[in-house]
Every structure is written in C-alpha cells, then in structure tokens.
Length: 230
Image 1: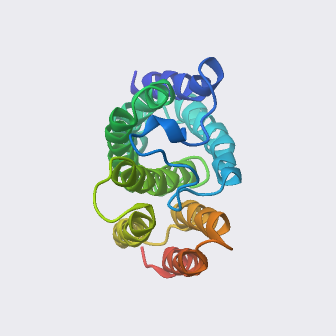
Image 2: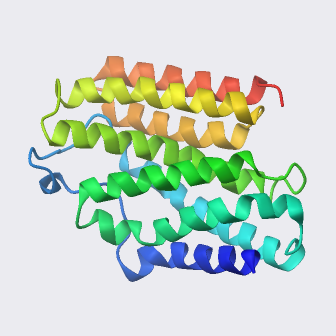
Image 3: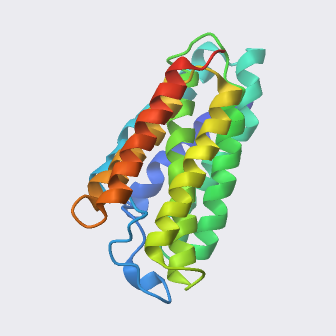
C-alpha cells in the first residue's frame, strides 16, 4: 500500500505543472515590493533540472512498486516522500496565488524530502538514493531562495542584495549539515551546486562578488559531497 501511495503521489506531482502551469519563479508583482530579477534567484535555465527530477522520481516510484513493494529498507522512505510529493502536487497553483503560503509549503516539502533521502536504502543507489538526493538538493536551494524573496519583497531587513548574501550562506551551511548526516552524497551536492551556479550566472556583470561567492560555494559543496565519509 505504501508503494502504491508513493507512486500515486509521484504521478500527481509530475502532472501538477501540466494541469496548472510550469513554474520559473515568482512574478515580481506578487510582492508588496516587486522583485524584478532578485539576486537570490538562479537564472531561468536552472529550473530545467525539474525535468530530470520529475522523470527520476517517477522511475523511483515505479521501481519501488514493481520490484521493492515489500522491502523494509524502501519502506523507511515512503511516508516522508509521499507527504513531500503530495504537498508538491499542490505547490505550483499555491505559488501562483500566495508567496507566503508557498514558502511555508516548500519548507515542509524540504523537511520531508531530506528525511526520505537520509533514510534511502544503500542498495539500488540509482533507483533510490540518487533521485531523492537530487530532489532534496534542489529543494534546499529553492527553500532558501523563497526566504530571501519574502524578506526583500516584504521590506524586512536590509534589502534584496543583503538577503541574497544571507540565504547563500545559510543554504550552504544547511547543505553542509545534511551532508554530515548523509556522508558521500554527490547527487545531493550536485543539485545544490547547480542552483548555486545558477545564482552566479544570474549575477555576473551586476553583482560579480555575489556571483563569485556562489561559484565558490558550489565548488565547496561538491567537494564535501564527494569527500564526506559514509
């Protein structure tokens, strides 16, 4: 039953952008202070990683249902992953209506995704650990970006650029903390680094120092994800 629930949730999650609308970031006018080209947000191309995440999560759910339906080690991931995917299925239409609600939901998605990832079975790495790591890694970046947008968009604190610096540091520290638990986890590190490079690309020429810091952060997280011990 748990495997069926995960498969159903994965399908609903993947179909969400089809039945609503694909998401490439919040619209500037969704904020009291419009956020036009916020420095905390990765360049638009970076969101293409969702295509890979969607496909691999469906493959994960299908393999789990057909080949590991009664496996105890797979069961450990199923409830948190199902919760994350169910929330995710409603996330895009929510984000189109309310930035604040979407920010709360994406943190719930992140928490349950990281929980599922840390419980991923050691065997079947490409079917289990890799897709969950990519999903959790991208959500790590997206959740912190949402915090920056809320802070800047509601006029909390020092402004959009300062928020970009704050969340870049906090996101990298959060990712490092996950990696201390996960051990060697290149799939998680790659997703976080992909987002950091996207931030660098978005800021070169306008906020070059932030762009360089994001690149250095990407290198650091990749190195940690490869060198950490299990």
